[in-house]
Image: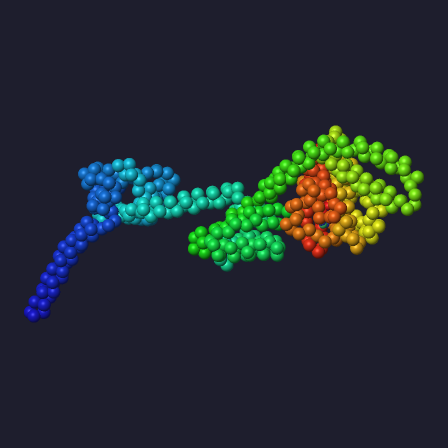
Length: 485
Ligand code: ADP
Ligand code: MG
């Protein structure tokens, strides 16, 4: 009896708990549904929307009446490959979680994350939506700005290097990689100061550039680099801490610009000198010829004790004549005949001419040349003039004798490369740019015209001349001559 009573009570309690649970579940469901921040939508097999909470109405910018007349897929913006994948996955796995772009009836686009479950309640499907538009927009902006940055960085006509305070290269654009002569992957991660071929002079220049950057936050320098005998000048502008621990250096090749500036300065004076020369040279030449002739006539009748005067007069006359000859190269363009000539032979002839003078100063010529050199399109007398001027200078800077090394080799891009190297005192860096200026001389009896004339001849031949020098070691003249017309 007692047992029966107990059993009845417990049955009653279970029934009550069940009722409570049911009631509770319904309430719980309703409040979860109403209060959820995410949009919750129930829909049938045909996509018809049956029920939606307030958040879903907010997300889809619809009133409840409107929303319940629509099909869920009406809102999907693109019914493309991706959309077909969603559908397939949903029917295969009975669930899907993904994100895509939706178009709202008011024309607004929203990027929504969605979780769909098939037959979630009473055979109806349920989808929960979360609006990720803001995050999506942020990501999109970030991608766009990265894209813009990439395009500017990669497409810039200037070289750009991003590097950190450990001096490691973080990124480099194609122009900068080209200037450094390395590929991007060989540079990234390396020490910025060493990427320039471990050249100590360049490293020192970069070192002081970096010091300036640390002191004032920005730095501007022009760095010079010698590459296969040619000077290249690079303007480097850096800005420190572009973002935390990231510096930017912009590198511009200013070699051409500098050469042009120097040339302009020189050619101004050159024009004046040329005009002057044209006017005067002839006027002096004619009386000079007469003077020379009569002096020669006098030679036989000169007494022994006056022969020294005679020698001085003749040698000074020679000097005047050679100066005038140099002037005349500038003054009259002459009708110069360019043809293809063997540069090796021209050099041999020049050395023959200078042999005596070299021997007097205890100087040897060491001449190396490549076989089968291409012929150079030139005027041989003018070429000879250039070689004479440069080799004479070399002889003059080696009063105690030594070796003048001459090399002729095939250069890049169908150029022939002539190198004339001496063991003289060398030329200080700040004086190199003065070479070729009219009347620039450091010699007591110099004219300062030899190099000017030589530079002009090389320029007329569409060639390039460069000077490389180390004080106390010697000087190298590099002449690049085109083999083509
Ligand atoms: P000049 O020989 O009459 O002085 P140049 O035009 O031939 O005139 O040379 C100009 C100057 O360039 C020289 O006075 C000298 O200072 C310098 N120079 C030219 N060649 C050399 C060289 N090989 N080594 C050192 N200095 C040189
Ligand atoms: Mg000279």
